Image (cartoon, rainbow, N blue to C red; front, top):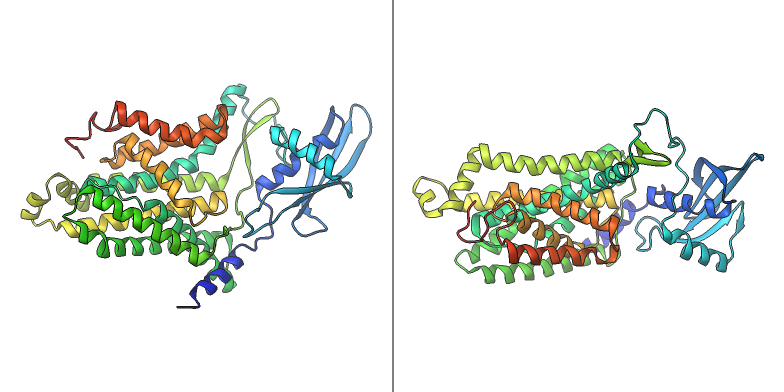
Length: 444
């Protein structure tokens, strides 16, 4: 047991040893190309490969100015690190045609060009095609933002459903579900690392193992939380449960820090080559295949929870206990069993959300669950925290709100806006948009 942190750290380092560059790094490198060529030059990317130095991405491209001849050029982008490095993805140097850029020129490039989000030349094969549907620019931009919001919608829907699944039974909020998502993220990385050590790893098998390990680990820890913490607080009021789960969240966060260390652990990107779906002039609407699949899986699981509670025998028992546990007991419904199953389902959904975060965004730190859990709680309250279907819809609303705010307003104030939305909802409609106008009497 004393060697467990060292073993986990070793496995996590193995999981972060991906040699490929993700799409964000490639896009950032492509963004620098127009600044190195005449303003009217036509740029065509040919191919991407590893550069002469570690953590260096080299792009070969063609540049044609007006009616002049075409030049074949290259750009080398040096990044601060890959894999498990905390500064992964930070561009720290550029070389054009093998000649390094001076520090002053690189500072000006990064400060006044790259930070302005200049539109990069398209990827090879992503040139505007006559076969793509032509949309108005506003519609194309909105479609791109909507597809970008789908993974976040799935994550928030899963976590918000977990909150509603427990609150509908007990009327109490469990503030440690965000940490269960972080636990699922760590478990998925460990599962992939174990698969890599067995030399049988493929991208598809890695995803399957990541989901299986994360769901099992999160469900097991959720069962333990219910048996050793929540069961002793059955007759306690809501404040005592809230304080106990806050303490549990802090303990789990420290547990994850000791297991994985303070640095982020990353999985290499897979199946993330963009697919062009529409265009508006030179603006190409792209979709991430893996992002769409995982979003569909997450939203499908949230919908499955809704259907489970509506049509299954367990769903009837859940509704009976949530309405009146004592009367349900008279008809042979065991309330503790219903609570245990609900907690296992909720924590398994949180573990799945953690896997989606890791696969789509690369990784999740030991302290990342707190903010994620709070946003999901906002989504659950927004939709009606006593209703699983309402909470899932609230997750969709929060994801849509975030992407609209990010595309139209300052990004750094997005979280403030989300929490301000919670304040407005609690003042104007405490039961949520899809629930009752008031929290009491509580209807589930």
